[in-house]
Image (cartoon, rainbow, N blue to C red; front, side, top):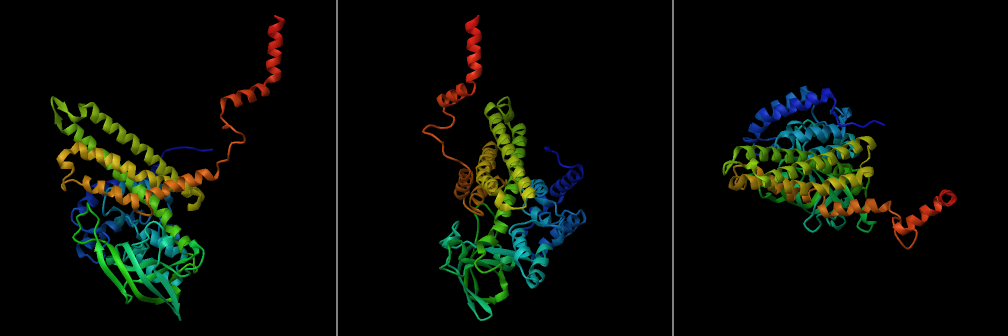
Length: 435
């Protein structure tokens, strides 16, 4: 059995190189580029494309993908360590080619797409020549896909999609959407839906409006409310078999959840660094904030929560690499997802408190990071659902007590112990009596 917590020396050099790129190049880009996913923005391309080439030369491009898809095949643990470096940045994931939702959509296409779909969409998506959208949530069915009503009906050699989708991120930048729609409304709950590739220029797609997220300063929102008005696509644009929409979705959702957590680790670490800088910089009475006991407590609590969460994320990533099956790690992924918003809320909240009025201003990123708490609590499934999933997985292996009292009932344990050692206890009694 081997056990260790060290990063191999060669990859540690890559992480240090990535950190330098973040500090010296990516953070300044974040001050200029409004949206790193907009591949049609000339300013974005002028600043981000050269950095992407540096990442490719370093062989750190698309670390979430195997060599057969153009990535190095480093696995989830190494990706977690890299995302910790990128997590507090806007452009970092795009520069390194592992941004959501494109990373998850690429996995779906790789697993379920036809050769034609892979050629048309997967290759340019991996190269970040195009962007993509995951169009799943509906206005009346958020965390419960079994409540979806968007329909896809066969018509000759086509599918015709009709319905509404809500919060379809990056739709206005995307070359295609991956859409979940009901194909068999009378089937068993998790066999009702299928997944489709819908080209963005297909007639009948109506972006009702682009919804913004509070705490972000974008000129226009990037989460679309979409109506699919008899949108006709070729029959071979289905992903997987008919009725396999839920199975296809899990290909990306399991990875998406842990990837969110990886980046959140970096966000939490950056918040702590800002707290430390503030504590030793800001005077208070005859000393600094760092001299105040309550401030020290805030810092200590933040660091402890960060370390606990980081280790849970890394262990989960390690298990995904070990088993190569998200289903075997479902409790771990749900635990990470449930812990994430709580840790982020606690640490960013303390960081804001230490920065006072500056902390709640738009002149620091802490307000935006604090708003991410609610995003992380909802993205890829509400926190409460993941808490239930953790409990469900743990309870599967639980067995009822064999008798009236719990197995750790002290009286029963003592009686069992006395029976187990009766002969020895009797011999001791005889020896004592003989004396």
